[in-house]
Amino acid sequence: ALAAQRAIEAGFDGVEIHGANGYLPDQFLTTYTNQRHDLYNGDVRHRLRFHLQLLQAVRAAIPGQLLGVRLSQTKVNDLEYVWPGQMEDARVIFSEIAQTGVDFIHVAAHQGLAPVFGSTQSLSGLAKTFSGLPVIANGKLQDPALANQALVDGEGDLVSIGKGALADAHWAAKVQAGLAPIEFHLDMISPYATLENRAQWMKPQG
Image 1 (cartoon, rainbow, N blue to C red):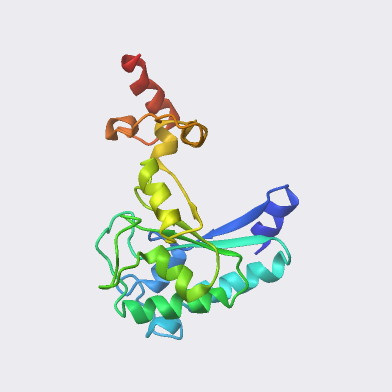
Image 2 (spheres, one colour; image 1 turned 120 degrees about the horizontal axis):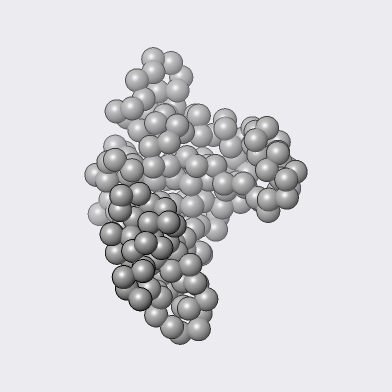
């Protein structure tokens, strides 16, 4: 909460809590990483307790300021993990998160538009349904057509672009102008995902 306060004091427009992708809050929510024997483990509401208390503390520290949280099922090193309660877990997680006073939810997924839990909605679409909050969709949406589809289909209110922006820093401006951005290639981030490696990759391409 103190770090969030300092971010606002430093002039940032808002704060997003990274509660996804295997980071600390997500380790509480994930069954195989949460090995506790107290009120922070058990059913989904207990495993979500850390997220909720963290967001409540940050909300109290920066009242009236923009606050969001990033959530996911999958991890950086585990693209297969699914919340064990599936649809019911999604309902509990997104509805309870909404009650903390956050302004938006940022949903990270391996495939941003992929339907989940046998439904017709993506995870970000379910976040909109269950939370009633603005939702940022994420997950291989660097193709402008897919990014647009996410918005048109109501799977998100915004899209976040990672690989696409690394491939082309002018991705958004080019898409807005109707131009094709530079496509992402895995070699751009080999051996590491840095701007320097991307620049080195671009040199032979002219």
